[in-house]
Length: 141
Image (cartoon, rainbow, N blue to C red; front, side, top):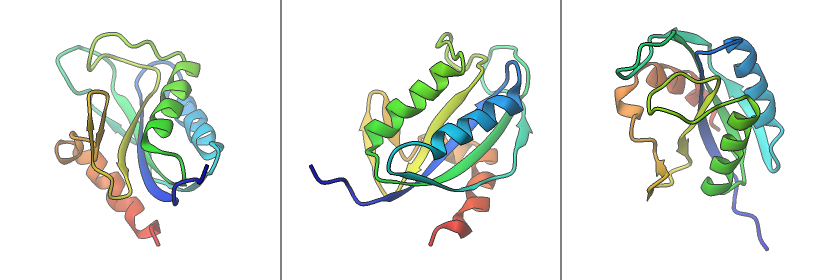
């Protein structure tokens, strides 16, 4: 079977429980070690207020730029596995978490499925994602 052509993937990382910086570092390492994937760059880490109605601690956020041949579905499965290894428990929407990984963009792909939307529909509403994306875009060649 032929692998798809590599794409630029922007993946957002967030953590607001436990060793937040440690969870981000672990996620960066695991994302960079994915098959047919190279870590190209990582944005600055930024602390942000939580989104949504549930009271919770602030987040550490960051975005990474990957060059990958993984499909959107395979990258999503890998992100979920990384979250699970970090102790992520899927509870209330917008709730606190050890690690949250979101595929923000994957090349120019547009996907609209129940559990996968590309580009991520929250991108226009998250200022910190806009800043992180702007920091990474110069690395796309």
